[in-house]
Image (cartoon, rainbow, N blue to C red; front, side):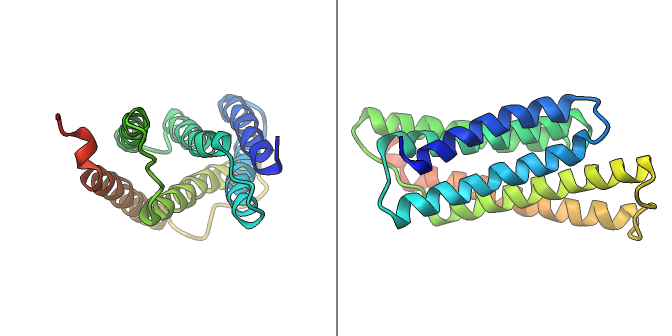
Length: 193
């Protein structure tokens, strides 16, 4: 198994630990969760870069890399809903889009068609990661403030909510928009013949 595929599998392992940590009552669970999510996000970048740079693209990687990404994102979104950092409807909308596109890719594979990722989909993933990192960072800073490591943040809750809402809005637009565009561009696969 080559290095990019090992990184993909490592991302799945880090995701499992991330979920356990985020659900725990450990003293610095949110801080550990932020670091684990950041590490998992870096493996996403690294495995793709290494696979393309050194021509190590495999069928396993084509299947597992996007699947590992979706599992990481779903785990983070569900975890943030569980700690009341995100509304459930936002997580549901984002995860639903991922299921629909995965279903479309399975339909395409059944018809021997390969659907490559589109550029907007990559931007969508980056903004999902940034948004999740932001909300994990807020959880971490709140954890530090409760433990007395830092005083309350110099920014108001209104600022945090405004920035968070802006990130969520952008992420939702990219997520839903890229999903609709992907479906439209591949509508011939859905049409009954």
